[in-house]
Image 1: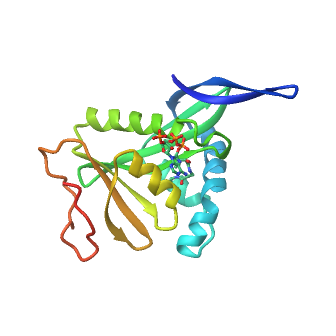
Image 2: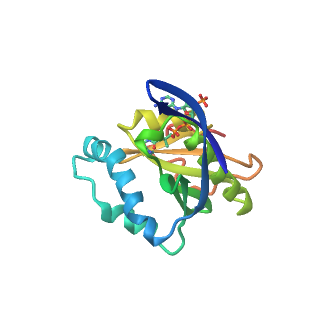
Length: 185
Ligand SMILES: CC(C)(COP(=O)(O)OP(=O)(O)OC[C@H]1O[C@@H](n2cnc3c(N)ncnc32)[C@H](O)[C@@H]1OP(=O)(O)O)[C@@H](O)C(=O)NCCC(=O)NCCS
């Protein structure tokens, strides 16, 4: 169970409360809510990065991949956040992480990153990686605060990485490629 700060409005009073969000594995019946959260968050970013319209099918493809592990955070029966991870090049890879617009900035993203790290450690992954659109400065700052560092640019995305076990070299291939910006090691 995750605790996060929120507000309730009673008459004209706005009171700070602790929200209790529970995490569980995503099921197919969650997909409409999950797609709506992502569409609302990402449409403008996808358009500014790639000049194309956001497509639900792209996220569905990621979520329905058999190797994907998908979890949601629920608050009062409503999905407020989710993430999707799998393994790539021997590292744990975050395919998607989203918090409902109304619940951003209350610690849910940080909680999900901690949960993702637990999964990475269970799998003995040496590092966690993700791609972020180059126009998504907000998310880049969030990841930077979570300990992720820029590795290289890939098209209109940046590859970011957090190394968990400094004794084991990341298995990412291509560090010496032309797009390489910074090896956090
Ligand atoms: C990015 C996102 C997942 C972060 O989740 P969140 O619940 O809003 O973030 P949190 O409240 O857990 O914040 C965690 C830390 O990041 C920082 N942070 C979050 N958003 C930030 C922002 N816009 N600018 C600067 N710092 C930010 C917080 O200050 C906090 O740091 P602190 O604990 O040191 O104070 C969420 O805002 C989101 O879904 N954004 C839209 C979708 C998106 O861009 N997803 C990523 C696609 S690559």
